[in-house]
Each structure stands twice: as C-alpha cells, then as structure tokens.
Image (cartoon, rainbow, N blue to C red; front, side):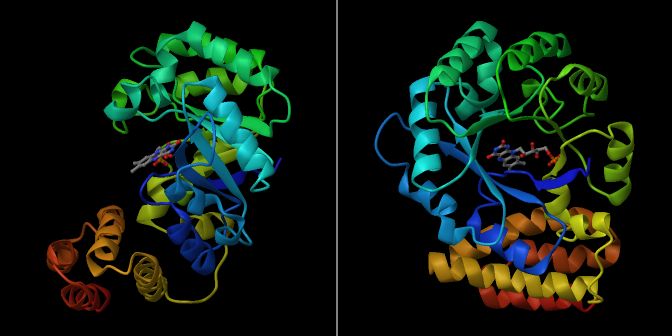
Length: 315
Ligand SMILES: Cc1cc2nc3c(=O)[nH]c(=O)nc-3n(C[C@H](O)[C@H](O)[C@H](O)COP(=O)(O)O)c2cc1C
C-alpha cells in the first residue's frame, strides 16, 4: 500500500488560504484537512467555516472536512449538509482537540472521557441514513495510556472509514514523547484503515514510521510541514530545481498577499504570517538568524516585516 501524506488540520493556520497557497508552491501532499468546524443541529454551518469548505475554495486538491461536536444530531445534520450541499464523500470527527475551551464542553478530546457516551454517540450516528463516510482523528485517552484499549474496542464496533491516531493523551497537549507502544496496539488491532500522526519533522522521521508500520493508509504531518513547507516534497523526492529558501520567500510573500486579499487588513495578515514564522523559526536555530528572526517577530507593519524578511533571506 502506498502511504498517503496528509497535511494535518490546524485551527487558525491551515484554512483554505494557506492550504491553496501551499498546494500552489509545494507538492507531495495527498490530502489536506479542514480545521474543525463546530457542528450545528439545523440550518447552515457558521459562515466563517462554510468558506473553508466551499468547493470553489478547494479546487484541485483533496480535502477532508472535520466536525467538532459531542451531539449526534449536530453531527448527523452537519455531515449530511457537507455531503449533500458541498459534495464531500467523507467527513471527519475531532476526538483530539485538548484545548480547555473545547474539552470543558465535552468536545474534541473531551469525548474520550466517557466511553459509554462515546459508544452511544456512534451508535446514534451510524443508525442515520444518507451520511457520507465517517472517519475520526483521535488521541489515545485523557490521562492514562491504559484508556486506549477501551477506546479501540469502541472504534472497532463501528464502520469507520479511517482512524487517524495522534498517540498522546489529552493531558499531554503537544509535548513529550508520542506513545508508540500504544500506537502498536492500534496498528495490530484496529479494524479500520489507520493513519499515524505526531512529531514527523524530517524525512527520516517519516521513513522510520513507514518502516515500522508498512501498512498504514497514511501519515499525517502538522507542525513539521509548517516548519518546512517542502517536507512532503522532500519525502517524495520531488525536486523542481528551485533554491529552497528562494522558494520559501516567494511562498510566504504569496501567502501574505492571499491573506491580505481576503482580510483587507495589514495587521491581521501580518498576524497570520508571524504565526507561520513561529513554526518556521524552529528550523533556523543558528545564531546568524537570530537578529532577523527577532525583527520579523517584532515588526509592527508590512514595511518593517518585509525589511526583516529581506535581511533573513539574504544571510
Ligand atoms: C495550532 C494547532 C491547531 C490545531 N487544530 C486542529 C484541528 O482543528 N483539528 C484537529 O484534529 N487537530 C488539530 N490540531 C492537532 C494537529 O492536527 C496534530 O494532531 C498535532 O499538531 C500533532 O501532529 P504534529 O506533531 O505533526 O504537529 C492542531 C494543532 C495545533 C498545534
């Protein structure tokens, strides 16, 4: 099986503007995912989120929309809407978001706290007619790795199209080592096509996971791709003969212009770019980059930002 490379959903970052820019400049991604969309039990999806899944904003790329809810009727209504109105054949459920505002309302990773309620959620969802394929993106528990076994039993009871696993607990946020021993259990016992997600930052990280788990349907990468938008190209051996930093500079400039075109606000567009730089800068730890990276971070307007970028890219 050829393992797919999937760009992880990242709320506030991998919306349609960034997604399309990435696709325009970089190859290697088989699928992009929408950041979570809060589901609704009736009517349309919130307008801000509708934009993200409109087919015209996702041309020429595979995109998997993701819903956030603990309420089966909200999930059913929203999944059907996404399927019927926007034409998506699969919808994902977020079972991993660890943020306190999400978890305190029993959503995202909060749904892993009550296995019986999770079981009832799927029971109700899978009784509904007319749904698209349903997949999940999950963590392995709330506080203890021992929780993972019961979660997997629930997942195995339902006809899920795919299970993407980020092998960390909700309490671990995004820090510490991933629990590959728990992922082993999913690899051996999960009945559904399986996707690995977590801490892939280099080509060799990708190769190690592909070798250890040769039958994965996909490997999903989040922060590693923000830090190095060319990571999937490097994994696939795609080389378009352009200088890597030159291409990054042109890409970032295009991303800024794309945000500006939609936001019509220098401040908001710059904020988005600084978020990207927070990830990009993790790859440029050498002292020689320190000054320009700090100026990018401190820049108050587009002129200051551009001057700092010019300094960075001319080192
Ligand atoms: C800023 C941020 C936003 C995220 N938003 C989402 C989201 O909307 N849906 C989701 O399933 N996961 C979300 N995640 C989790 C990522 O998809 C991914 O599981 C996590 O970053 C681990 O993978 P990585 O080590 O490759 O980054 C988010 C993570 C971050 C850091």
